[in-house]
Each structure stands twice: as structure tokens, then as C-alpha cells.
Image: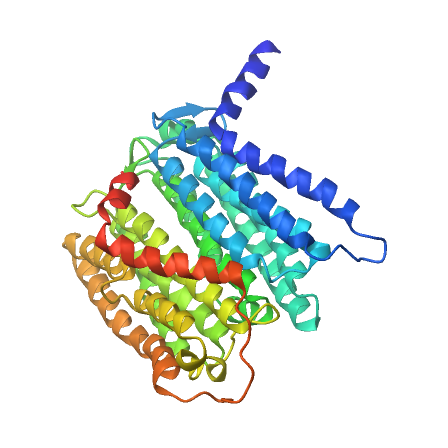
Length: 496
């Protein structure tokens, strides 16, 4: 018994920031309902207090993250390495921005539960990176999924919002079933759920269970492709984005992608081609599968985005296209002058700034009650709200991949990673990336043209007061995407 307690204690020391976040979740869930009457009424401004509490909780967890060591450690269910350190910091910073984005998008009576769900999602994201076992990985994935169902419903409780929540709920359950079934095949082949033990069992080729391992790989990729909204598991995204609030759309555009790609980075080396679990090169069949998904995802996302007039649906298809870009890094592997894994991690940071910035500024421009959601809403925005239009244009330029923004460097890294592969697949992926970047420029720059070159649809309408919290998040994202273009080396160094 003392050995078990010591094992739990040493494992818990690796996830102190996540424990802090989960303590904050418990406080919000237990105390929040006590401040709401039986009639569902709460004191006006209560959401401001809970938002501040969420920011303080993230700050305390951030202090614990910053003081954590970078020495690789494996202790049972969890491990600490450079990937965990990077993803933990990225999720905490992204979480703080998302708290500001959520600030005006939730009512006072449900604010505690909404912030609790957001903190739980952030904790689950980090725990996915910390997982050293199939069991802990699956539990971390569900710690992201289950609060997401709740926060989707809390944000918009009308018929359309309920339909969007139900679609995401049912398809997410299907995704989890695929992942769990794939994990069961891995366990059947290796006889263990621990990543290290699985690598040892699968070391050497050919392996007796190679056929089973291929089935497991296909199931895991299929299940995790739902989370990153890759084709053909993308079809839920436009309806869910349109049917929920802008803050929830911002969460869905970034967090599932972080979770999906980090989980793929953890499980793909288990398929056999691993070197210490940090570098891998996909075998030809896996490379062809990942490359095909990347190409189809890029083209479907961008071509469908060309037809969209609703900004949330446009951002949903944009999110699909960006998933295709990042899949290039998985397809080309990680033992190149510009490794695919490093290119993905760098792109996740830049993509987070871009997409959170867009949704934050759409909320800020629409005011406290609604967000800018259609072409007509942003038409002539530079005349009524010039600063918001300028910041939004910077984020859209970054999504396009134009200098001087971080999005340019993110796409450039992925292009170099693909071209450095020096195979027909790598060169083809690089050219597809360049073509799709050009396609995406049309619908991103069209929005910029609407803001700056078109007259307002309703020029006599009264000016809407700017919501300060999402405005602050949007400006921070726009400024950071310029700053990251000027000084990107520190972020690139932190990945290794």
C-alpha cells in the first residue's frame, strides 16, 4: 500500500498545473449554483467575478508550469517532456484569451458552470500531452469532450443551439468509440497500455500482430481526425459553428485541434517506427494515408469556404483547411532539417492567435449581446469601428499567410518540412499547400475588402458599444501575430 501511495504522489507531482485547474473547476461547480436563486436569477455582474476567478486560477497554474523542470520524466500514467511543457503553456495562454472571449457571451446565472467547463477543457488538453498510458490518454480526451458538450449547451439554449450541441455530442461519442476500439487493438497486440511497454513489445519487425496494428492505426487516426475536423470527419463543423456562440466557436476552432494533433503525436510512434518516442518517420502506407487526408482536407475546406456568406460557417471551413495544412507535418515525419512535428507545434501557436483573434473581434464589434456574423455585419466596419477593423484585418492576413504576420512563418515552416522530405509525396504536399494558400486568400481578403472598400449596409444605425474583454483579447492576438513575425526564434526554440 505505501508503494501505491508513493506512486500516486510522484505521478501527481507531474501534473500540478492541471490539479490547480481542476481545483478551480470544483470551486466553480460547488459555489456557483449557491449564488443563483431557485428561479434561476443571479446578481448582475456575477460573470465578471467568475471570469476574474478563472483568470487567477490560470495565472496560478501558469506559475506552476513556468517553474516546472524540463527534464524528461516518466512515472506510470504520466510523463513530462518538452512536448508537455510547450502544450501546457500554449493551452494556458489560449485559455486566458478564451476566458476574455467568453466574458460577454454567457449570462450571469450560468457563468460559473461555463468557466468551470472551460478550465476543465484546458486541464484536459494538457493531460493529453502528459499521458504515458492509453488509459490516461483516453480519460484526458474525455475530460476535454464532456465539458465541451456542456459549454456548447450553456452558451445558446434555443432550438438551433440544442441541435448544434446534439450533433457534436453524438459524433463525438462515435469518435471516442473509434479511439477506444483502436486502443483495444493496440493492447491486444502488445499486452500493455503503457507507452514504454508498448514500444518494447512492438520493437523489431516484422511483428506477429502487424496486421492488427494496422487496423489499430486506422481506427485511432479515424477517431482523432474527428477532433481536428479532417475530411471525411468534418461535416459536423459548419453546422455546429453556426449554431453556437462566437466564444464556443473559438473554443472549437482551436482546442480540439490541439488535442487531436498532440494525441496523434503520442500514438503514431507506437505503430513501430519510433526512436525514443520523440522522432518518427511514417511508413509508406501510413504516409500515403496521412498525405491523402491532408490534401483532401485542404481542398474541401478552402473550396467550400469560397461559397460561405455566414462568417461562422466560413471560419468552420477555414478550420478544416488549416487541419489539412497541419496534417502535412504528420505525413512527412520528424527527422528532417525542418521537422514536421516542430512545424505543427509552431503552427498551432500561430493558428491559435489568428482564430481566437478573429472571433474575439467579431464579438467586440457586435457588442455585448451579439457578434458580427454575416457579410453585411462587417461591411463598412472601418468607418464605424476603425480599430476593430484594422485588428481583424491583421488576423485575416495572418490566416491567409501574408507577411508581416506569424501565419506566413507557420505556412513557410510546413512548406519547408514537406519540401525537405525530398519525395514525390513531400513535393506534392508542398505544392498543394501553396495552391490552397492562394485559394484561401480570396475569401479572407474579400472580408478585408468589405470592411475597408464597401459602404456600411446600415450607415444610420447607432454605434454599438465595444465589449472590452473580447476587444482586449482580439487586440492582444493581432499585436502578438505581428510581434511573432518579428521575433519568432524564441517560440521555435521552445518547441525542441
